[in-house]
Amino acid sequence: MTTVNKPNFLYWIIAFIFGLLWNAYGVYLFIIDTFTDNEAMMSEYTEAQRTMMESVPSWLSVVYGIATIAALLAAIGMLMRKKWCVPLFGISLLAILLNFIYMWIALDSGEIMGLMMGYIMPLIVILIGMILYLYSKYALKKGWLH
Image (cartoon, rainbow, N blue to C red; front, side, top):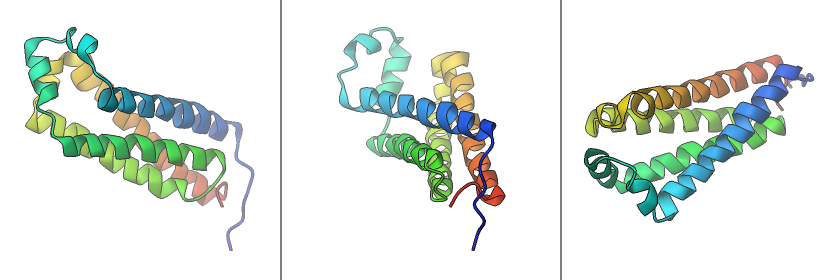
């Protein structure tokens, strides 16, 4: 039997801001990217960027959805102090890594999209995914999750 302790203030900040808000925005972007006509957004891209975006395989959209939806569900679980948030954050992190590694290697997205959108933003997403996964493991160890 595990002892359930009260989490500190930092826990709630991480769970709400980096967990819920960040990942709700991620799901919003997934829905926009996947289910809307992005003609206006595509007009802002260069020809090479449009070609790359059009060559993204459909299975990668599934991975994108898994990354964002699993993370949002995990964040909700973290706010509810449920231990099942840990494996969901892990699944999300694996999907994030698969998504960006494929984009970097197979589609050369880093070079095509430029420094900010090609490297910095993906690294921020990876970093936040890692923080949420590792922090949820820490919270479980501290007895904050049940």
